[in-house]
Length: 443
Image 1: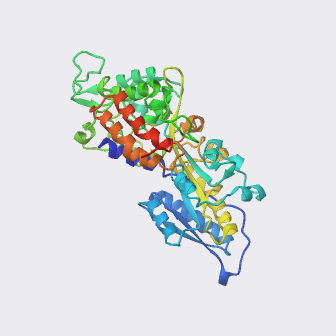
Image 2: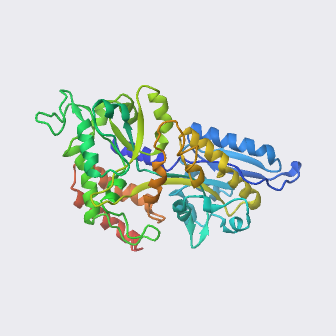
Image 3: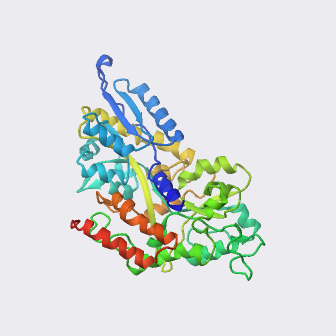
């Protein structure tokens, strides 16, 4: 169950993004106008925003016909199949990990010349962290539309106030976090984990639940690999990574502030439902949970977000998603496709998605403005995510990383979560499988 939830949430983390508009394109004859096909995925809200953005843009750009191709499932495989069949889209929506796949297949157009000659579109307006992710050898292959660090903890503000627990602050550490989670965890007799007689088998309200092991490993000083941009060695069996993973597990099996494996199945509710029913005081995820939280909670209680805590030595690091738009090398209309990319990654769509709470704009000026940091809809502390971007750590830039995660890494993590294997033993096995692949010595 945990693995299923983890996979779905990470997929969501890597899915959500933004859209907008660019400079008016040169018009061609309407009876022979180029068609620019855009492949993308996304939830209903996101699809509606993208569609509306393009429809508005088309009113002033009648010389280009934009064809939106929404692919709700198996996105990468379907696009690769279209490429192999000689019918690729002109533009693809790409998250920070799918980008690695298409870049390594040499399928993407270098957008640097377009950026250099376009005086109305400024890549310096975007968060440099995600621009760097989409840059290889000094060339930019993807224009960002959103950033998505996983460094967010949603919390029930009304519950904190009722229990007289100090509200969390963005600069809190693991000690303060654990103390807070302990105070908010109660068994059916009203006992806390630090009180005599606490029954860990009969918990009626948990203090915390989270899925991103990345945040704990990074904040304890651990790393997945030696160099994210050019990985050659897996570092998951080094002591800082082990300590971070062990603390994550201890939240369930030592401190009892988080559900143990299988407990969520027994409770019969999703994490969002547990939180909205006030059976969970805090949960970690990405800001994309916001629209659902607004619907589920309404005005029944106050809630907000806070950055995930710092590690014991003051370190901080978050796993991250994020996304953007790429132009395929095979497009017949690169100039027109560039104008469409400017629309999709421009200001209008980013503002619309910011207002919805669905995604954090990649355009830093929008993220720091009234539509995001200054937006008064819950959560109020959205500005903390602008700080969180500074600590975002992307997955290793390796063509087989996603395959290794599914086949070699997560199965061992799943065994750790289910207490079937020790943390060090599990990480040792991961390193034994991953290192030869990173070093090109796979048998």
